[in-house]
Each structure stands twice: as structure tokens, then as C-alpha cells.
Amino acid sequence: MVKTIFDEKTGELLGAHMIGAEVTELIQGYVVGKTLEATEAEFMHTIFPHPTLSEMMHESVLDAYGKAIHF
Image (cartoon, rainbow, N blue to C red; front, side, top):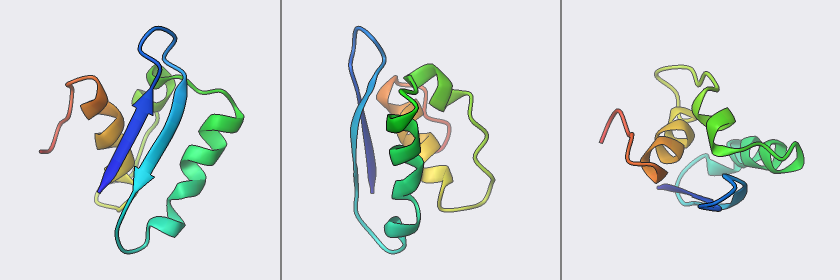
């Protein structure tokens, strides 16, 4: 389970919740995004390989704005 939280007005990444196997291998994506002050638009336009666990991050970002592809 991945949940991504953005500031509604600025699009700033505020945080993320990740639960499940292998999430320790994924959290660095959000850490890098936070460090670089990435917005939701930048996360939405980032390429996440398919099929991989990292794709869950992309889906979570899209879902935060009602644009999920796989649900």
C-alpha cells in the first residue's frame, strides 16, 4: 500500500505512507523527490518502469489527483 500526500495549493510533496514487502527499496524515490522539492506534476511525468513495484508510487501520485491508471 502506498499513499502520497501533496499540498493542495502548491503541489509540494508533504510525505508518503508505504506498507508492505520491499517498500524499504522504494522509499528513496520520495526522499529524492522531497530533497529536490519535486511537485506532483514532476512525479506524474516521471517514468516508472512496468511491471515493477516502483509503479505503485506512480499510481499513488496519480490517485492523489483522481488520475489512477490501474485500480
